[in-house]
Length: 62
Image (cartoon, rainbow, N blue to C red; front, top):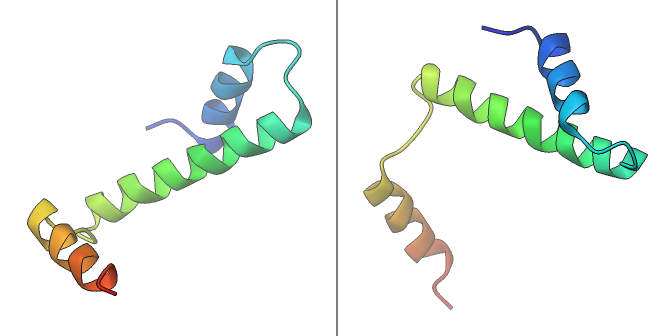
């Protein structure tokens, strides 16, 4: 598994030279969310597609 710094360096190296600070912040935010999701899955903190559909159907009822 890569370290956080390795992931950040890889991300920055793939961004265009004219990338704004806001774009970098956004990409780091997304990278962090993806890593958290992967950690959650690895640690059993997830639900099946059917469970997710059930939750959403309850939340989206008027």
